[in-house]
Image (cartoon, rainbow over all chains, first blue to last red; front, side, top):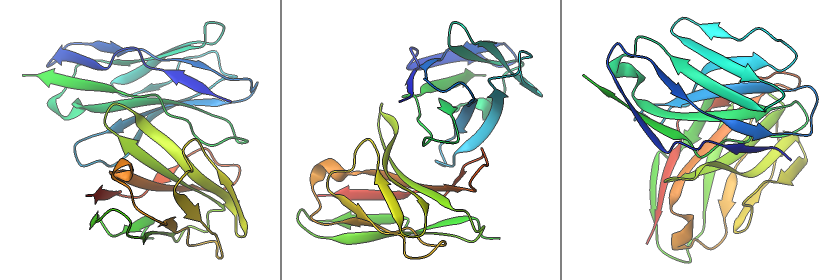
Amino acid sequence: AQTVTQSQPEMSVQEAETVTLSCTYDTSESDYYLFWYKQPPSRQMILVIRQEAYKQQNATENRFSVNFQKAAKSFSLKISDSQLGDAAMYFCAPFSGNTPLVFGKGTRLSVIA
Amino acid sequence: NAGVTQTPKFQVLKTGQSMTLQCAQDMNHEYMSWYRQDPGMGLRLIHYSVGAGITDQGEVPNGYNVSRSTTEDFPLRLLSAAPSQTSVYFCASRRTGGFEQYFGPGTRLTVT
């Protein structure tokens, strides 16, 4: 079974600043992915970034990057140059092909103009 | 492609009523799942299916039934609605071997 802990229920960041959202997970799988999903007020679930566990290089997508520490089972999301449109709930989710996607409880990010 | 569609978008039920939340996808995905989202709880898995005719329970299956007679459709049935089932329900699908989940827009259900 996979478990996910997001220890920050709420975070806030000033516009144009950088913020890091934390996530730790546990899995017995050796081959898996890690995802960050964004859920804006529209409720739509949007895949922000993914990391393959076998890759040592941290994934980057424009202003979004991750810090993946496999031994520590840590997967944090860094948002640089924060924008008002980044305000949303963010969910961390480990995934392997053999099990359903499991989500953390989420972090609500507010962006202050 | 319409992707993953869910109907209705909103529903209000009285305690004890039954209803079916519909989910359909047109991407020929084998894997489909239902989640519920409550405030502060994230998304919790209710039931999932790895293909037509095969379903399995997730984390919170009590009070819900599912069936998968076709690849396209995966309805979620509430047999006797309870206020504790007030939530937002999401359906998702992916292809076997794929990693990306496609989510529907959600159904907001209120049970009074």
